[in-house]
Image 1 (cartoon, rainbow, N blue to C red):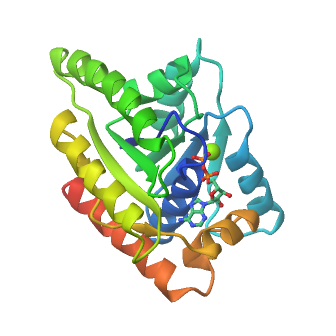
Image 2 (image 1 turned 135 degrees about the vertical axis):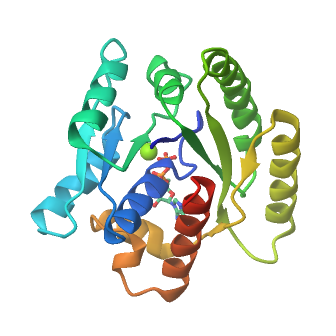
Length: 224
Ligand SMILES: Nc1ncnc2c1ncn2[C@@H]1O[C@H](COP(=O)(O)OP(=O)(O)O)[C@@H](O)[C@H]1O
Ligand SMILES: [Mg+2]
């Protein structure tokens, strides 16, 4: 399946989620690759660190940012590579590449910071675009589903609880879902990313459990 880790807002955890899911699914034996569709190349850098450290499993990362060839390049990569899972790490903008990524995806994973700011407003713009994409896909006999993912959550912070409630309202309005797994604010996510790793490769029980729970939800979502 092809999945986009997408939000028009920067810093919501798109790259973090893409990297951590790629590692976790690879360790489970799935053949996974990432398309880094962001010009800044954060996940490309992550993959170079991984390569230099000779970490296994090896995770293929391709930097594809040209909107004109994006769809054909991603499809060729997915089909020729025989991947079980291709994750597109999207740029933080309402850009042609992000729209194309959503259009070729089976699922969108939409991380949202529970820390407030304008994440919700930006996500609404994304969901409006998603509605159009879903309609076109369904008219052509296809399918795409979107899942919101609460990220950066801190327990006992009223604001964070309120943001999750608003996320659930968005789900009802736009007919999308929310992962029940909530990704907590943990220093280890930043540390893992700096070290070319996923949190499951570092010694952190809580983060490892959290990502494991998300993987289970994704497998259930995909009917596995
Ligand atoms: N759950 C989390 N806990 C702590 N830090 C996080 C978490 N998720 C992301 N971060 C950090 O927040 C910053 C932005 O995350 P990133 O994945 O790069 O966002 P995006 O790709 O959406 O711009 C990074 O420094 C990352 O390490
Ligand atoms: Mg990013």
